[in-house]
Amino acid sequence: MVRDLSVPELVDRARQRQPRAVARLISLVEDASPRLREVAEALTPHTGRARVIGLTGAPGVGKSTTTSALVSAYRAQGQRVGVLAVDPSSPFSGGALLGDRVRMGEHAGDQDVFIRSMATRGHLGGLAWATPQALRVLDAAGFDVVLVETVGVGQSEVDVIKLADCAVVLLAPGMGDGIQAAKAGILEIADVFAVNKADRDGADATVRELKHAISLGRREIRGPSWRQPVVKTIASVAEGIDDLVTGIAEHRAWAEDHGEFAARRLARARAEVESIAVREVRSRFGEMRSDVLDRLAEAVRSGALDPYRAADDLIASIVDR
Image 1 (cartoon, helix red, strand yellow):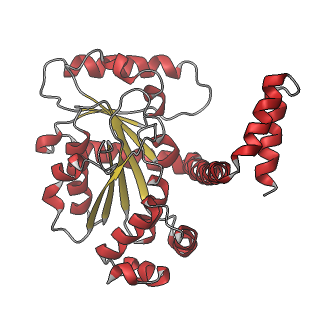
Image 2 (cartoon, helix red, strand yellow):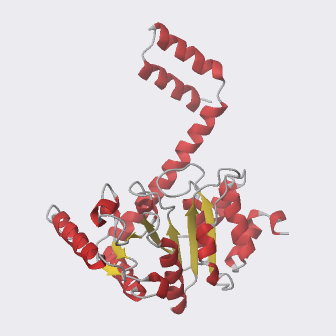
Image 3 (cartoon, one colour):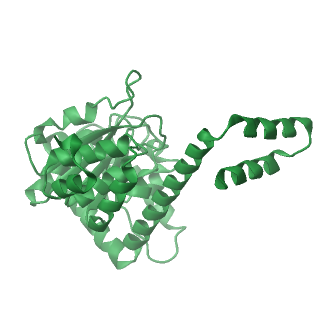
């Protein structure tokens, strides 16, 4: 059984395009398995090749339908495609609700497409905490393109920019003011805008508002900068998807020419290292004897110690363990 294989055997089978091995490796990541360090070590030499495209936007804009249409477009180019669809956590089991995976069922029989739903498990920012490591699995398994679809929580979904080579922000007419939906971070992280459901009334107005907002933002930028294209799509019938693929490809070319691609990859690595380090500190904090914290808290309560000095002493006790 795949479950009984060693990590090197799992990685070898994943690189041989065996989906069960890929799924097992992602499960080890999601479950924070004791073998996670071994998994990361085995995967690392095979990573760095996949193009990572993030898709974000408010609920109801058609992220899953657009993701499915992009899968078809890239498969038509002969590329292997992985999908990490971040779904809300089940309030009962803590697992993903699988809504995105259900909507992409048309690709279930394609051996060169791998779709995995991931639960947020309380993690904010639109992604699951395990998404970066799951991305490493798909990258090492030889997928050419990895689509990362965020959970759809609105204006706070900005973590995807830390992970993706290209961030696609989707909006739809008839869901309130287009700029209102894109403000507070979302507007700034977009590399490509897609106004989906463009057959609805108000699509042209949404496009105009976005282009106007982009032009205002560019006035504050000195030097060369990427001008985000605004693409109209009707993902349910794959209309405009070729234009979206072109916009993504043009951004990749611009990013490589201007050093942005390498800078993002470096930032991704830094964020990944930082996340793992913080998680390790939290783990050690949880394992620490409560009497240490109680002693420091009592010193703060009595006025013998200020809270910042107490926090420094707490961190020192964790590091020294």
